[in-house]
Length: 436
Image (cartoon, rainbow, N blue to C red; front, side, top):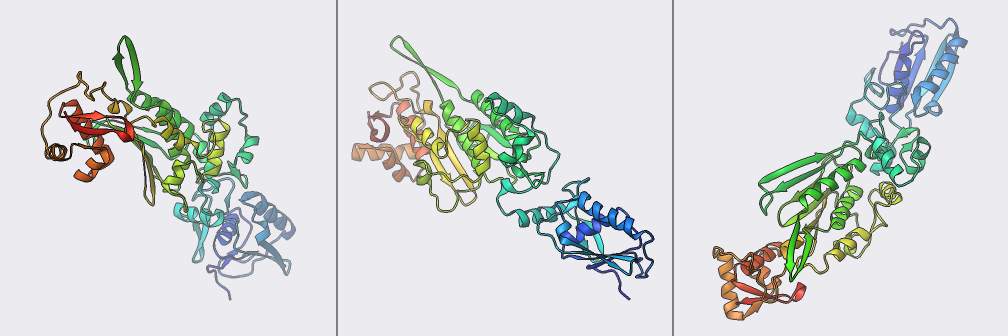
């Protein structure tokens, strides 16, 4: 006598519950279901086997997604029992159409029982079947709406309809992909912005978190950063010159880079830190293999999320691959402090310096309107002693002398100039400092 086990299931009669058994076998290692045998292994038979066979085959075809029929074989035994042979499927996870890609619709075999799969099991099955390309993988969330995406497409005169979803890569095997999830109003990823009072980003002034569709996140974040982007006015003769701390286009390009190229397989947010000296954009996911920071600066691009990048390209939010970072550096070409790119194995950061913090004073290098006394710190004394001995130095000399980074050297030099301790000669990379 046979007993139920991880590969065998008995059903005395046809009930809808049989679909979950087929799903469980297809999602695990396959198995056999005997319809017409009770739980104790006794033959009870099926009264109307033709009608039952039709209901069974039609139900398995219509109730389970993706199509599992190619992995199912039916054998009639003595015109009393239907033997249902289920092989392991290749497009896991299989699930009840009525329930969707969630534990109530996805089943796996556990011993002699068919049980709901855990969210982690579902994610692993999807990853195994679809590969590691995040945007092509089937989304766990299928109840999606696209109000913000529709508005964004319509704004640029581009059709956005259910018929276009497949062409964009939002639908795969009649279910939504992770690309669709990113564009949807239900997007799980967010952007966090923090404004700090201090240079080392430890004392909070304000913070915001923006969620929803990546289109909404982009718009909300741009609008908020515009509030952080102060305008400084200077008077030269009778002319008033207004200059923002950061070029609007540089902020836009840095934000788009973080949204389009981040690694969405991580659940963490894009982080934007702002203080009086800089604005830094940190996104998860380092450079793709084979690329360097120099490659990025000269315009080499290999999008991590090609279909997402193509969507933003269609909407003319990005002009073409690889131009954004170059455009940022072009905007800063006359600024004494340049943007900085930092890359780790799992993160990418671009730092935009405050351009108004780098304003040069007229002729003598001083800003008389801002000139103020300053405390002679150990670092300032070291610089003054060096200048007494060597006459002049540049920013690189200061970095080496004090073992500090470029941004700190710039801030220290500016403080000393404004305090009247030293003067600056020249501009940009040729700028030198000497005692007054």
